[in-house]
Image (cartoon, rainbow, N blue to C red; front, top):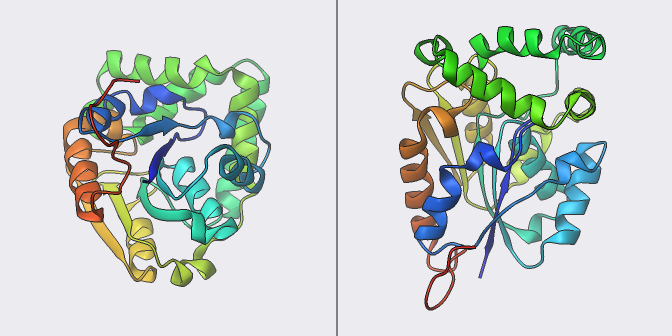
Length: 247
């Protein structure tokens, strides 16, 4: 039986999956949300910790930085990964321009202006029709700030230092779902197409009316996509035998 491990994005926690966890468990799946990204300084260390903390074959479902981490886990131990869902992510390293942007943002965070930076970033994180929703933006800012500025800085540094995973994509032999919001400005569709085009068993899907935060913006569509994909993997894909309990 596989364990489904959900991997949050940069500076996010389990609430990024608040609509997916109940739906997956209601369908009988065994689900855990990892927090290794909060406890280790780099993606390689995060990947090794995740493998130590979860036994057996794993189904990894990662969003943004979580997708990057899933690829690192697969590189560390391909025999331990039964399948991956990579949402709103990229296999590319940061460009020099993006590293400069992150570095400048870290200075802003250190000087106490994290909230202001995040409110500007919301315009890129959401679909345009959602970016204008003040309550939704407040929710996003609260999510990122909940972990503290130190976490925000540390995880940005981890992402800046990540490796280019594209040379290893052709070696991925497990089933992979690649999904992207149709208005994702942070990891545009071309990045998902690049991943899907390089992995032999990849399935590419586009989520309509979603930006980078598709799990919040279009939760029902994401749930349907994940549940169908898991069903296609077969009965061993993270399902509990017998009566189900909410955990």
